[in-house]
Length: 283
Image (cartoon, rainbow, N blue to C red; front, top):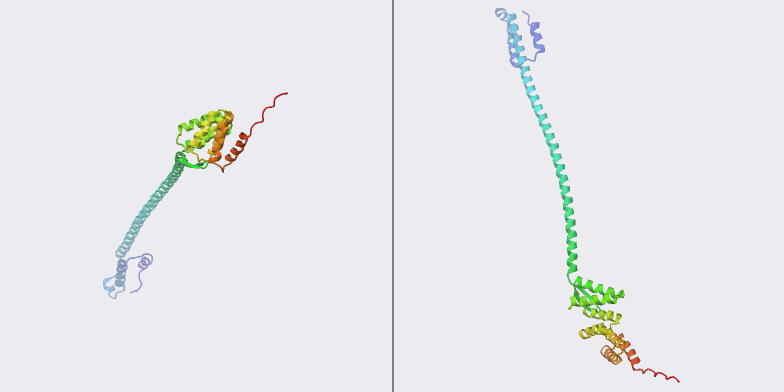
């Protein structure tokens, strides 16, 4: 008996990726064929060979179907992953868009906050300026240091500006009104001095004397007092009251001997003491 496998069996064993069970079946069949007792058992007939082939084909088909099923399942999983990735990408883009929108809102809010801070700073500066103007200021005028509010300072300076412009009537009116509105003002002595000068400029010598005397009586040691006494003497001279002028000049020299006004008073006293030459009678 030949020990070689039949051609159909060899062909089947060459191309098929048989499983372990199929190889065992085939090995059993070959063992039977090669067995010394084959002559008594006989060789597989065609039906058995066909059954073996059918079994192999059936096993191959089952393996292929199982592989296809796994591939189908994997393909479904891949498709699901693709859809999940697409959904995730869409979500990421949405989040990016929302973040960009929120960033824009934050920048807008930051600009609004900066603008509000600037306005608040400007308002605070304006308020501080108004408060500063309303608060009393420490001033030094004609050697006297005192406090005055902004309106008080402004009114006095406006009145002096009128005098400097030779508006004696306007200056006198402004100073009179100023002294009535601010009777306790620290500007009192200076206001009285300039009021007397305004009246002198208007040739209202009696009113000028009143203004100057108010300064002398209230503040005998004020910086402007010697000048006020000299101005009183001038007004008295204009009124042809030389005796009163002489007394005022003597008071000035006695009370303020080291001042320039006192030196001018001495010169005036010399003039008042010098007798005038008698008028010559005609021949």
